[in-house]
Amino acid sequence: MKTSFKIIIASLFFVQCLSAQLDFSSPNTEQPALLKEMSSKVENGDYENITSILIAQNGELIFEKYYNGNNESSLHNTRSATKTMATFLTGIAKDQGLISETDKIFNYLAHKNQVKNPDSRKDNIIIEDLLTMSCMLETDDSNYFSRGHEERMYFIEDWTQFLIDLPIRSYPFNPKPAEQPYGRFFHYSSAQASAMSEILQTAINEPLHKFAKKHLFNPLEISEYKLDFTPTGYLNTAGGSNYRSQDLLKFIQLCLNDGVWNGKQLISKEWIKLATSPKANARSGVDYGYFLWLEAFGKDKKHNSFYMSGNGGNRMHAFKDLNATIVVTTTNYGNRNAHSYIDEILNEYIVPVLSSMKD
Image (cartoon, rainbow, N blue to C red; front, side, top):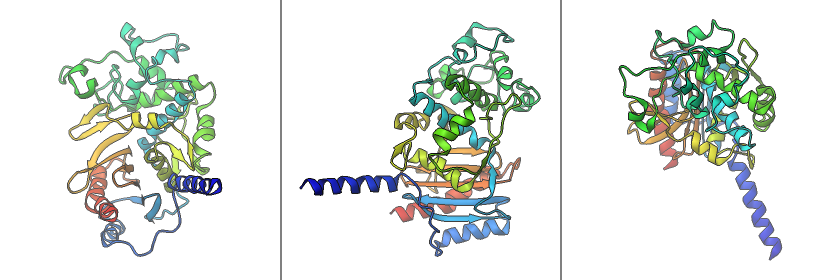
């Protein structure tokens, strides 16, 4: 009786381990007609400069194709999609008791001796303000006239100093944060994401890229990548690092798995829930968590997704209701239609296929 119970427990643990990782066996060569049509359009250039599409459901890779001279070993610069690295690393650091989203940022920036545009309100900026792109500083990448636009930041050596030197923003054309959904005013800003690196490195007291390798990359068996760094030597958590498509799929699958990989809790379930819950409204129909976008897809827009997103239409999606993850990499940087292409691919092809396979 005891032996049978042990066998059952062992079997359940084995199933849990399988469900918490990805099976990268070659996908079935016979693909649904919709995915064949999608792939043909990519190959014909109807959807420009796409370099890879990977789709997994129930932990199994069901579609994997590379385009425009790329292959399984290619490294992809997915630009701002890797802002979500700061989310993962903050969660791991919090789980270790080293930091909290409610901490004030200047608890970790005391070494910044002088701050321009001094204002006592700056002392109240917390880490969650940066994770949600909603801090009170005047930084907005969607407005080239903003003092905190990322193109101005790149000419400054110290990117964190660039952020905290900015003045407090006003809201002449928008409702104030208290009048906004979730009580926050969203303004997309790479400077906010970049500052998380120095804050985290101060909190953990070691180079952030080494912390990432130890607690994230190694457990996920990610060994081929190219990291990007700021001029002052911090890991660039605003974007720019390069990863293989399969490894990008691991990152978003880790979120779908509530932080579990190979039976081990790499990031707490509580943190993943915080990160993937709406904290600010980005625009109509789109909310924002901790460096993650929240939006519904499919022809009927009934399938909610949280996703990593970067310039050119680079996307890493998770759909809880479909138990599915998707990676699309591109080099379509600066193309105004880039994200529209990916939305169409998701709505017209991938989500309908996943929905039918789930049913």
